[in-house]
Length: 367
Ligand code: CUA
Image (tube, rainbow, N blue to C red; front, side, top):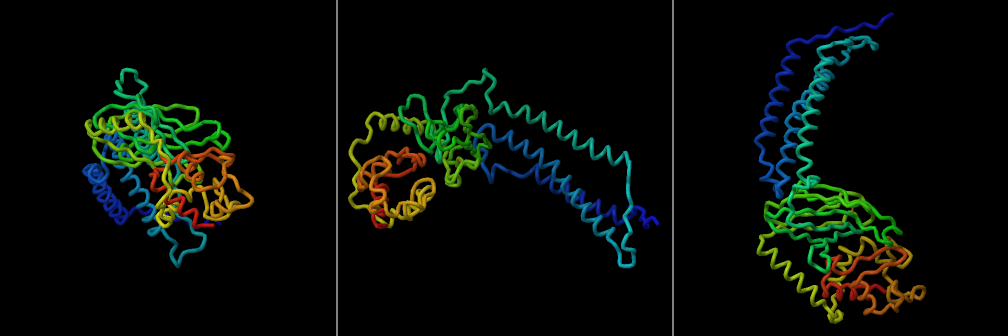
């Protein structure tokens, strides 16, 4: 016997529910149009606004789709629930081949996708400078490492680590890639990501491929560069900074960098006055990405360091030198390449000479 089938009942309750959903949708759509994103989340580059407009387009049409789909789901679940007096095998009304409905839910989303595709096609070339007509004032290189960013400026001998200084209003092209030297290949060259939320720019940094992106910083300030590709144990610590400065400030910074390159710090680091508790704070913030404060065998990326100065099984450091405070400080200062991986230098880790002294003082307390 065929189970009893209910007929569709689109009664006044249904149309009231549609009315409520329409009102909520209109409120949300107006909200999307008038909401000043820039007030809460600066649009700090010239490409930010067109990206936000794309987002607003999606949110504007996404709001009613979300409200109606979930609203109907809720309404039908409640209105056509099984009543206590109904047979257990009762089924709801089945609707097939309702051409009006099927056309509606096919044509509207298809049209929206086509329009979105066209709008995206217009926006994307704004930050991928495929068009040679585009005049960049300057081209920089950005290289993702485990787990820091390296920036190379034209005319600067040394790289700048983790801090990307840019003058406001100057169009730049940044060539993005990921480190692929022998050590990284040996340990697995990985994909990083260059994401500056305030620029609304996000691009993977891929080993072996250089991807230029293009933008003009349009708002002074300091913004985060986020690595959004899981690149290893230190991924969550991989942050950089973009500092958008006035032209005068930028020129002063650039001149400082040139001077620093001309007169490298040649004096050896002084380990005198190292503060172990300050060193512990730095260790926990920076070094625990790769090292445990535990015996050698408890390694993460590099070995555990608690017996660094007092380990009969490992009397020598990765540099082949004896484990003395000066030789350890030398590794912290210059970084190291070993069979376990690459340790970035002091500049890449954002350490001052005083930090190095504090770190060594702390490591000496661990034995
Ligand atoms: Cu680099 Cu995640």
